[in-house]
Amino acid sequence: MNRLASSGFSDFDRLGAVFRRTLELLHALAATGDLPDGASDVLATETLPHIEDMEAGFRARLRATESNVEELRALVLLGGLGLPEPRDTAEARAALIEAMQARAGAGGERTLAGSPGRGLAALEHARLVFALMPSTPGPSVRYPTGRRTYADIAAPRSPAELVGRIEELERRLWNVAAGRVPSPSDAGYRRVYGFFDIGERLVRGDLRLS
Image 1 (cartoon, rainbow, N blue to C red):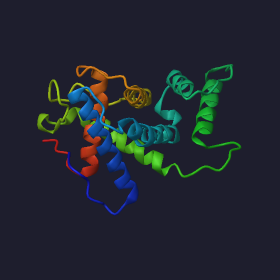
Image 2: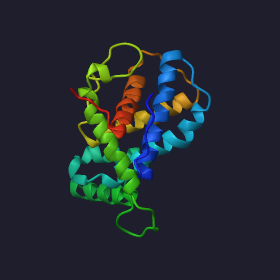
Image 3: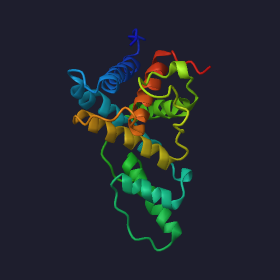
Image 4: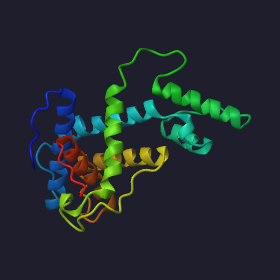
């Protein structure tokens, strides 16, 4: 696969390197059924930390107006936050907003944390990748088996769907790092591969949609 030339921006170059190395090992696994040497280290030290950046960006960006109360409740529970017993709908929403602000580092007492810029950049890149995947023409799809299309992989339409896709990436990549070999026809693995396929092209500036 093509190598990235330096852009002069270290974070952008790091992002490109993570997507390139991850795509290479996912391609080798899909094509041969075996991970190349050092693949688990790449996943553990580069790829999965990037997914964690995406999750941090999601928590920093989430706004209460994007979801209804039930969806907010589900999102907060996914984040591992406990909820007080609400007396009415208004109190339920207020508690959820407070919990999400605490999770994102906003509101109330808190310790100083680093800038969320890296997480937000990772999330926005991911959102763009998810949006572009269904429109990718066949010649640009690099998945080595089956149909040359990502048209059946719909973009997330809500915060809950977005966080679900991010969690799927994390879960599937952990499985790969642990040595669990997916079937080439595994739809979930194809979604993960497609994410890094399109993400690598996007960083490289070689994404053709026509």
